[in-house]
Length: 342
Image 1 (cartoon, rainbow, N blue to C red):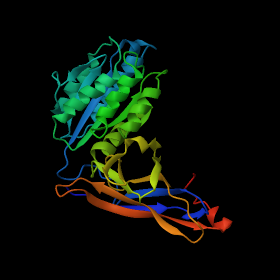
Image 2: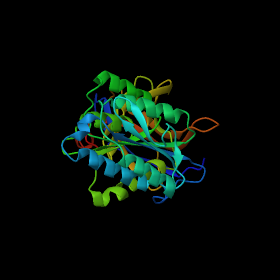
Image 3: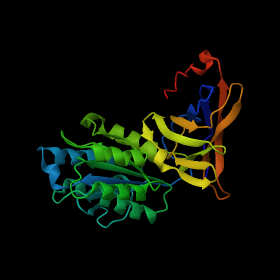
């Protein structure tokens, strides 16, 4: 797999007051180049569009028609050659196009057939978004695409399953695909959509105005399936007696990644950061707790590496270090990096 060049930059105030234990840093990850209009050679992409067809989409009037129009715009935005499917979500998942639960190759004719099938949909039944996610995850499991993306179009009213059931479904899908959620109608509910998008490295927003729909969906799909590096993680190593307090994405969107840590080795944690494309920059806020020190003492607080899987094992794409220096100079210890807000 061909990978873009990465840089990892650390911005911090390394000075702590005597006895201080929390070290804050902003980790900025940047890929080289400019955004590309197509995925790099060798990467395969798959797109699944879920349109909410439950009874709640019947009110306010016009909500379901808006969902159908948004789904058609999303279908129009799929690039030629990308495998895709459209499914209807109620308390189960129903194939829309192709008519059996599988993926078709996007081209003018298949996009037209998909839009015709969407136009024939009618709402009915309950809502179970966790079931949608589970079915999509199962479908992706049998598909070879490296870059896998879901668009969920819904009013967010998940009335047919518990919060714990949805949480279990989200956990199952972490790392399997990215998911962007778009709220449909004038009274869509954001809470569950935010949970889904945050865990699955996507975004949540209202469906855009008709004039901007195709452009927004095109940009969304390019960001997800036009990426050049999939399954990337930030690996944080801390010395003995030090530990990560929290790790969050700070920009361009805010996502708490602390609970998504996996542990590949002693004192080491991996935090998934999704798919990357050329010319992309993201900021992460890292807080490390270290043993207290005295003035003049210095220590390495953390080593941050951007890694991706390869046939020969984890490949390091970029690296930086976080340090701590204790001082009795209040001017030094009280100085705060403009980008770090503890």
